[in-house]
Amino acid sequence: MGKSKQKSVWMCNDCGNTQARWAGACVVCKAWNTLVEMVDTPASERFESLSSKTAIPRRVMDVEASEGDRFKSGLDEFDRLMGGGLVAGSLTLVGGEPGIGKSTMLLQLSDQLAKKGLTVLYVCGEESAEQTSMRARRIGATNEKLFLLSETLFSNIRIQVEKLRPDVLIIDSVQIVYKGEIPSAPGSVTQVKEVALECMHLSKGRGITTFLVGHVTKSGEIAGPRVLEHLVDTALYFEGDRQHGYRLLRSIKNRFGPTDDVAIFQMCEEGLKEVQNPSAVFLEQRSQGAPGTVVIPT
Image (cartoon, rainbow, N blue to C red; front, side, top):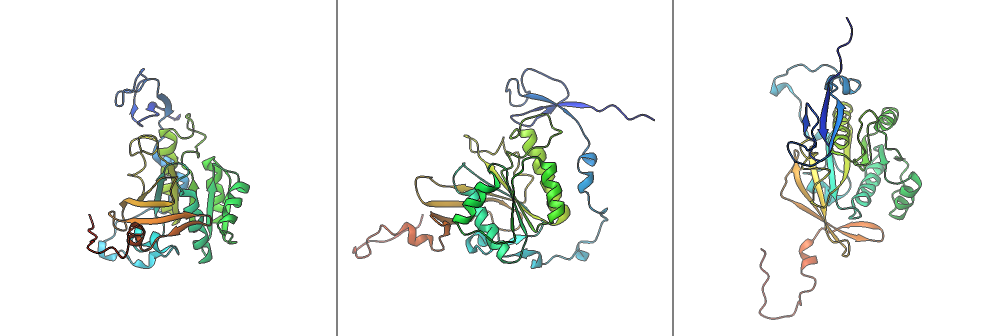
């Protein structure tokens, strides 16, 4: 019996909507000339190589769950924001404007994890390995357990992950990585979503703690309206003015910890420095000897 004919669908590069037929404008977001034809490949075929052993139902009390799967990163403020440390096999999105400090923080995080004996693979798709190495040396991230890979094709990244078997994987950024079989440009909603799905299966199937760097658009979203947040376990956003030294790392989604907390960092020549006493920062301009004054938190 011959193979069934592959079905095509049309996907909007702006909002990710799929529809059966081509149209001049997307029926959901109304954007013109954004529909791209895609082969509707079943998920079982797309992720077959990443599938783990067949799962069977188990009673909830029979499933072992402990804090042993959580480990410290070495950055106290970051660990606090994450709910007490990192979880093995978790997928975290780190978003923010270009140049705000995402890569710097993750390089520092990589170095701290490598010092603990963990193997870290940092995929630097936007820069060469030499450029990333220069930046890493400037902030002192030179541990021998930290590996750099300058690659943008996901199939090649997956091959290197299978060879190295890292404990931690960082992809900087998810907008530059692409799958060759998808007929759309890197950074499109289609590519970003498919790459994130691949990373999710890789992370869960191999137990690799994975970070995805995502640049925000002018509207404050990452490659479309909330296209990644529902896929990841944790979503963190860097905020701050590049003209000033302080950065806020805010948790907007966290399956393993609180979502109403903020970590504060200060940008300096050696990288990002943790601010463990934010109150002192906000009160540093206040005169200590002024009589009759009071501080009120709001």
